[in-house]
Length: 69
View (cartoon, rainbow, N blue to C red):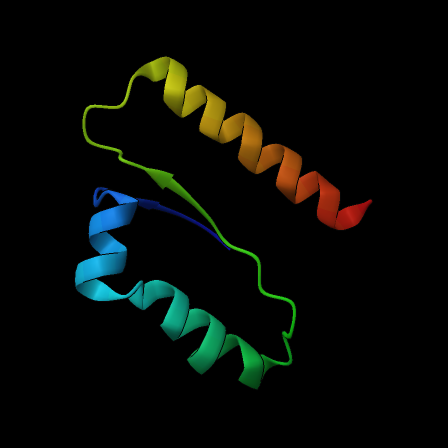
């Protein structure tokens, strides 16, 4: 699972407890037969540079390609 966020990781964890992880890994994907849930969060989007976003896209491509290898 890949997603973006504007919330710094530390704040998300301390204030929200990572709601996307809970929703997808505990409430949605198990019912679709997905047991192996891996998640990458690209953050923070606001203020990120073009270079950083390009790096995120490269990472996403590598991870997607690894699923078919």
